[in-house]
Amino acid sequence: MRTTHEKARVFYLQAVEDIDAPTPAEIAAGTELTDQVPVDGLNVNGSSNNASQAMLGDSFVAEQVGTWSRGLTLTFTRESDDDVARDLFVYGEEGFLVISRFKAGPVDGERVEVYPVEAHEPLDLPSAENEYSKYEVQLAVTRKPAIRAEVTAS
Image (cartoon, rainbow, N blue to C red; front, side, top):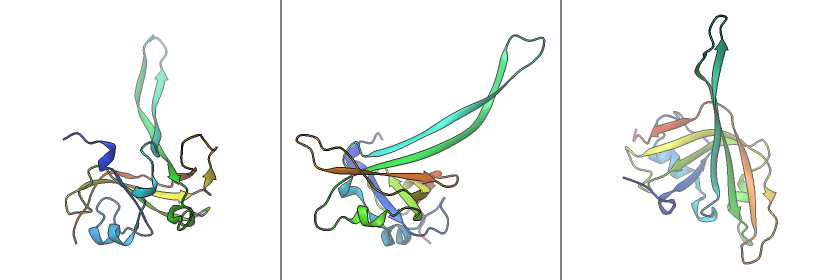
């Protein structure tokens, strides 16, 4: 089944025991940020690197899969009363960002992405005509993420 942005959900968790198998209770104990993230506000970027080695006597340069990484930037709309995301992300704060692309849950068996992260301070974005005020938060992915995690009831 294909998915669209209307089905994406974003959660921030303080703790996850097993990032490959977060529980519905762990996700429910976190903070859902979906309602503050505009359509273009979830940016998962990264790099995929190859290792190559040219050999004497051969004009072909062989490559093998090398290192890879992920980075996250979240854009939020600024809230005047209770700006949950702005209060949540403080420089150096560590936690877990969970992305669900299918809006099913969190339910047992749902596929999610779990990123161990450390936050930067929110950065206000330039104002624009006919748009809400926004800010972004860059998140450093601190170790290998679980990009194929499955919610597992314990």
